[in-house]
Amino acid sequence: MNYFSLNKKAPNTTFEEAVVKGLAPDKGLYFPESITPLPKEFIENIENYSNNEIAFEAIKQFVGDEIPENELKRIIEETLCFDFPVFPVDENISSLELYHGPTMAFKDVGARFMARCLGYFNTQAEKQEDVTVLVATSGDTGGAVASGFLGVKGVDVVILYPSGKVSDIQEKQLTTLGQNIKALEVSGTFDDCQAMVKKAFLDSDLTDHMKLTSANSINIARWLPQMFYFFFAYKQLRDKSKRLVFSVPSGNYGNICAGMMAQKLGLPIEHFITGTNANKVVPTYLETGTYEPKPSIQTISNAMDVGAPSNFIRIEEIHNNDLEALRNNLSGFSYSDEETTATMGHLLKSCNYVAEPHGAIGYVALKNYLKTNKDVQGIFLETAHPVKFLDVLYPGVAEKLEIPPQIQAVIDLEKVATEIKEYDELKAFLKS
Image (cartoon, rainbow, N blue to C red; front, side, top):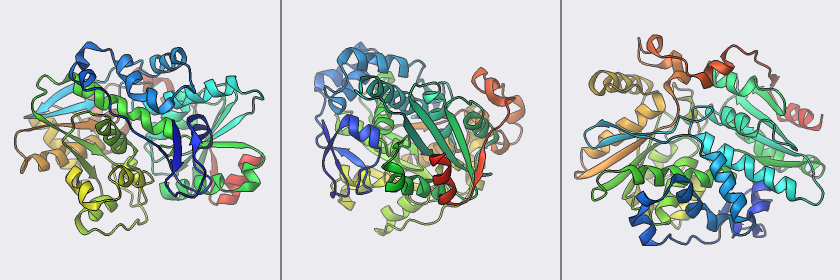
């Protein structure tokens, strides 16, 4: 499988090179040259396959022969070492819980898969060189990448996060592990962190002397494995005759874009819903036809505080840059912090379900969509464990939650982070 840059000004490349480089030389995101649907018989008989077998069938065409089949199956097995339960919540509404992994966030899948791919490529290189993984996080990415890459030989990880704009637990998960993991606390927003990362990839003064790659969802090995759990959710449906809609809380739009790739592979998904907060660039675009990135706004659903979503260009490519085709497949909703808190309260009181802000937005967006779309079953993605957002949960809930062992392991560790403000400070840190 070859990959091309969505900016169309760089040579096509292999899976390995796209993973190792992260971003194309022309600043574009990589996208697969072709997408071949899976056999209908496979989809129709999906209950007969294990999660590992499903993941292998979904990803193998995108890896090609660059990782041997037995190695790819090993990578998948080590990646999918936890459950992905679908939990009934309301009439025709279920939650796909993606927080049962090591860092209790959906990003565990992509981070673990990418770390193992990169580790494999390093062991196969004639001349092994250290690789620096550079990643910006608005919350959960940092912890997932830190955990996924911890101790991987020949890989150093540098995580940039916005000071004061991630939860205390999220900060502990990305600043306490040590070893090959380094954290940089940036005075600014997630967009500032992301801009620094992109600038570093294009700085020949750095890239001529060190191997840099990204572990954000701009990297295909972080993005594509997120297809897996859309298949796992479909496998668990009791009634597959009803039309299926997924509601995805969206920040950088990698997760919902991966769902659309699963749809392209033949998974019978009728429609997608993007739910977001005050950072509503995409819902506004769907409504007005004007795409206008803006500075991000801080909210209680911090992982979606993204004003310039990187992966949206991939969503446009999937829909052939046709706005009407996109509108037929995607609906957008946005909610205030007050509406988000009220939704968490409704889920608790009426459905006996504890949700964190991102999942609550996914739920209420789906609920609103179902008002005018009947005979549909919907699944919203609960992307992180509520315990990671103790300070913004519905009043009274935080005191009742038990701290899971994954969180207990880091909560009392000492934070270690280097404070920076400007790109030049990042550059100096990388050079050192």
